Length: 456
Image (cartoon, rainbow, N blue to C red; front, side, top):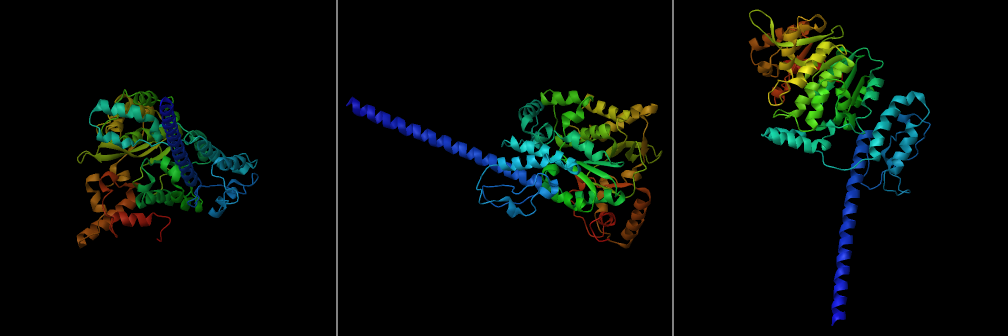
């Protein structure tokens, strides 16, 4: 009897062992599939390639002595070699390592970019990124701080990782031959990058064909080739690049602020943290590199290359004409300008993430009023008609088709004034993003006058 019980016990134990082994195998297999799928998606988006729904991805026939762009397979059929039948990414990395080690000097810049991106592929691990905008839905400051501290490692844009670590080198290579530099920021997903943002980019090049435009954006850097390819095809110099925030903030007053934020000491606030991050990021980029910063909802109306160390007033006193409030959608500064450093100091010292505009327009307004008598902090403050010719409260009139003869006359006069006096038109996207753009409206006419891909 005891022998029978022992046998049944051994049988039950063996079934449990087999069940445990089966569960472990399923878990490992699922993890591998997720890891490979992530690897495949990143590789495809990085190289602008297409593939089939098959568990095999190989780059074949890569000549290590050929040009980098020549070595990239133009036909997606060549990516899948059925005769090989391998199902991992090792051969991809091996082939691309050969490419980036190619001795051809004319491809040095492209190889460095590839080298940065494919080092990331070697160590890629699947995980779900935290949505930084969740902070807006947390009403208690302490809980916001704890959420950000806990999720910091999974918020891509805050990290110095394999995608962003090449930032300094790529920026140096791209800007080395650029006398006119434009910068803009896109923190949002690629899916919401639309015609308005496209039109903004086109207007920069329509007025400045030889300019270099740098888009600080992780989503466009990784997945935005389809957006940028039309510009590249025309020989226009535009680059999307993932920011390296620790590098940009290094040796500035905001470096300590950033560390405190990471440790959960500073409340990120109720306002969109992406907005506050954009506020300081534009200052850091201009301080380090110098140039012209534009928001993505700005249309460039004429040449700005003769401007330097300038900021625009958003509003002015109707009686005295003196400016009341400045704005940061358009900033023009030399690198290491002392006023930029003052802006960064004020941002770090009096950061408040729960008041709209406190770390942006109101912040620069406070600083310029404080230092306007100091000679080395001087800058030109342009009147509202230069950069912000329409206030946010009246932007809807620029999106509508004239309804009467009087409206038509007003529109004609306004268009003439814009072309003669304004450098830019700010669309105040926070208010106008959901407005329908009517054919024949002021904004529609200006987009068509200052585009490069449309028929004029």
